[in-house]
Image 1: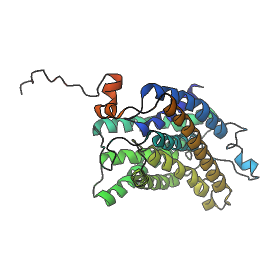
Image 2: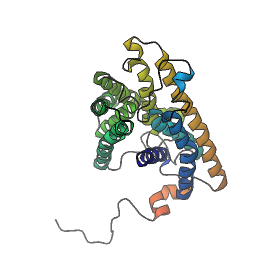
Image 3: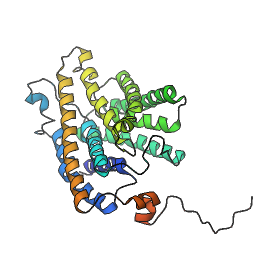
Length: 319
């Protein structure tokens, strides 16, 4: 129960990344409770419990394969990304939203956060092995590591081609993209295919983060571009490279069919239910902060604190 609750917390937290800087706190707390109850717990049951439509999809269609989502490609990443998109649409864009307007305020802290996520992901994917008594824990750990590191290479390669430079923030983003993509597939790939998946996810997610500027939705932390695209890549990739059941292993298209139907079905459900909850909160008690509060800084105006507080009256320390 505790392990499952950490998945729920992580998924809700991912949604919050899309609306950073412009959401009121108490409406967000209400949204989190409603969304977890009417979205996440339902989807988790569909994906991982016998009797859930995603879990039983292959059998329902008369196939000899089952939907593969070992640790949350659909239930966590695609689900949260679809919700993030819906909520970003409900709350609208930040003041001054434009390409290049926002950059990491502290690169070392960003990389420390990536490192914590990277290490935690071994518990995220590997913990599922303990829960299901799966004996391939070593395979899961190797695949998780391989995809993450390949994701770094895939992202910075695209970054180098597009921008002329490979950045440390890009490398961190690539690691997360690789980790997202391997989440559903960690127990069902040979390591060489985990490396290919990481390269593919890193490169595609590096391109996908530009979609918010093309389509005009303000996704503050690129939840859609990294977790959504990475989640779809990881889920659909299994249709081709899943050990024994993928197309490249001589099997038919059944695995690909169930992966596509499951992921698209979860995404559509999440998009609709999130829009209903978010729109309802916005139209009743209000979800978005005032423009003046946003410009002044939500941390200071809503919570009375700042990330960096400097005493302007203090005498400088002599060199």
